[in-house]
Image (cartoon, rainbow, N blue to C red; front, top):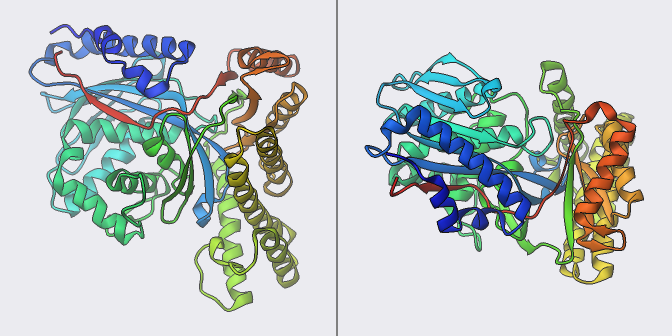
Length: 491
């Protein structure tokens, strides 16, 4: 049966519900989705009609504030972005899973579910994430005495830059998770929902948070554990995908809402506040073109920051004769201004280790900035409020540069150019050691539109780093919807 995906796109307002009314974004998404649909029809169209295909959209995220705080129980301010993965999938009839990338240069991933013992036959770019998803999910289903996964046929397409600091790997993990769970009907299964909810409670999640769906919240934390390798309640983990983090990517990707920012806390995940985006300003994100590599050596740099934080917890427990597990739990009697200074002085006096004292100082100083940001966002429509927000995000960049030492020269240059061009604030974000930064600018300022700013930012950056032409990206980032799954009825 012929799939008229164009009719679906135009007739349902699907893309507008996800991405708003930005014309350039909508046009790009139409092209990507049509490309995926055409390839799906070519490869697997003969199966359509016997089985209803599902359509998955999984966005990326921008960490506005909260550098390296989530895995220590700290908070972050998040924007759900417009870059995404689309996937179209349905059950396989030949006992073979095929995940076909619409970009043929990146290869395809082929595997057999094989009961609870999946076997990879071919791995394209990102295939290691597919394997981790299927392997852990199969094991958790087996241990819970739930039926195994089914093989699937899928085509996917994505425009999230890997290594760009905007959660490309997390978006891919979630896309693969939804391809298999949606096709198998797990997301509608009462037994599976109860499994996730019950283990979410064991992991510490407080259900019934205002305006938050319990299952989606618990699912976001569960899928985060596919990356960090930790147990989720009684659902056993493994070594994950190599980086150790909290749940911020997965929270923004699953719980994001159009035109809203999320203020969240982690370990366990809690949505503290959903706040409107600033009315007269917008976020422009630049991917520097310098990918944050995920080689073994590069991972050691990322994980060094989490290892330092863990050592700081051990040291503070010795100092205070406590048994806390997270930096969040120390100095709660002090106001946010004094926590950073006191923690740094305690660590330095006890150990003489300046690197360790810098790490703990940054954690509490960043938490202080986030608290001040909440006040600024209440007044974001007032010039003083948005100016204060800009100052805070620029301060966050300076803290990361000085104390985390994870800001590469390209990212710092992007921030300097943005400020020079009139941005009210700018900062690098994400794991660091490459990646991206963002700037907050007026939608229509004295020097022109947000699009004018993006093009000027791009020109100035390429003047200094011409080697990143064709790689770097400069895009407006409205706050978009979280992940969505549709059943393509009528095809």
